[in-house]
Every structure is written in structure tokens, then in C-alpha cells.
Image 1 (tube, protein in one colour):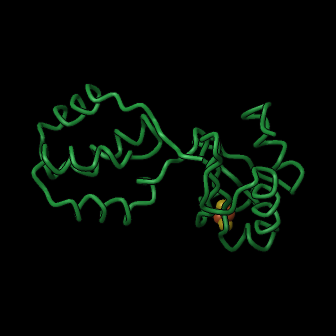
Image 2 (cartoon, protein in one colour):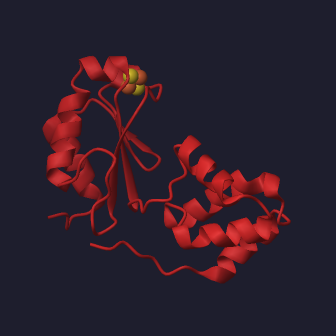
Length: 160
Ligand code: FES
């Protein structure tokens, strides 16, 4: 399925103007755009290049370097499975597998309905509660396969 979003170009202009079209604000501009769409739609890239007066390669470098920025569509809910050592020994792999199976995607992918993106992350600093996942900014700990799946399902009762 083709992922597409309707881009609000006026909003994009407002973000660029908020930073006075300053090329050094590229990361902030991309972050603000990501806050709206959960990713930076590729159609926006030429506009950033033109309005901020920078090289296209720089935009791609930022998207590659910063994990919070993506040029690929991402879900409304970003599910991060902690794969740090403490969570790993408590079964993070099994949780990742269970969620991947439930959402019918692989780690790093987004569901076709753009609801969920599943990613592994390093220690998020709640090791005592491991294994831990986060869904957007909410943290859920002490999970097993079943409770991890139930947790994610609560974000959308209609996941099929
Ligand atoms: S290893 Fe998972 S929170 Fe630290």
C-alpha cells in the first residue's frame, strides 16, 4: 500500500518562518514537521532545500543521523521495545516478536494503516521495570508477550 499524507503547505511555511529561514535551524524545522506528520514527507525536502538555502544531502544526513527524524512514513503510535541489556535478559526479544506478529510487520516497519511503527531502542533508563516498551511518550514495564500485545492493542481497539 502506498503511504501518503496531505501536506499543509501553509503550516510548513509557518514552521520555516518561525526559525527565520535559518539554515542552522534545519534539525528543529524537521523536528517540528515530524511532530505533525510523525515523519518528514519527502515532498517537503525540496522546499527545505530552497527556503533554507542548503544542500539536499544535508537534509538526508540529518534524517539518517537522528533517530527521531525519518523520511519514511511512521505510525501515529511509535512503539519502542527496549533492547538494552537488562530488558534483553528479561525477554525483550520475545516481546518484539510478539508485537511484530500481532501488528504483522517487522522491526523498523510501519503498519499500512499508519497506526503503528515498531522499533528497537537502547536502554531508556527504566531497567528495574524491564522489559519495557514505550508507546509515544508513555512507558509500560514488567511486560510479557501477552501483556505487551494487550498494551499495544489498547491504543487501538480495532487492530486486526
Ligand atoms: S535496559 Fe531496558 S530500560 Fe534499561
